[in-house]
Image (tube, rainbow, N blue to C red):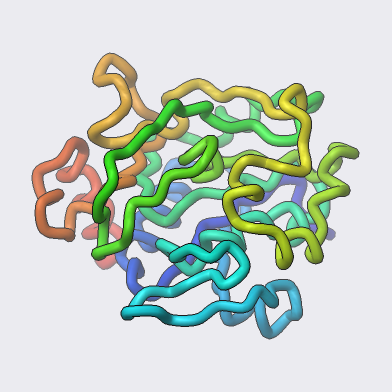
Length: 237
């Protein structure tokens, strides 16, 4: 029997420590068990769920359909979360997160009339390079899908098929091209607090190290870096 709700965390081998912190901090704060899965690209390919053509250009993973670099291996595979879950709410999270509260509270904030719920950032990063030497790309609704609650039972999400995920440009998926605006609900900003960008007046439930995690040069002393390192030590203990 499938669980009612589940969490899906993007996995990229280059960010193994980040993935460990995200997954461990989710589980540590839960009061009742909710499954937490990693989205591993090789596994999704083996299952026939991910077939997008990719290549490597100048050492960077490249999405051939989008004609653009992929900052992480899970740049597109995140949209498979509701297909994997089948029912209930599937909550996807990037791997560069630190969870600071019980995410069961988030389930209580979800609106069943919405197909997806996200923090609707107005995020306009400067051109350049971000974490791990990745190019900082711009697209509509950037960072909305970095924490995304998919309502698997919403009829509008029937349009989010394996075929769609594997054939349209990534920028369209990140803009939720299969949905009308009315189907996209808004979460409180505390559920996807962007280090260096979100208001310091907000007490974050989920900290998102979108520019770089604390093990990367230049981000060792960023906001919540000490909490992130403490979580990594708990995981490693």
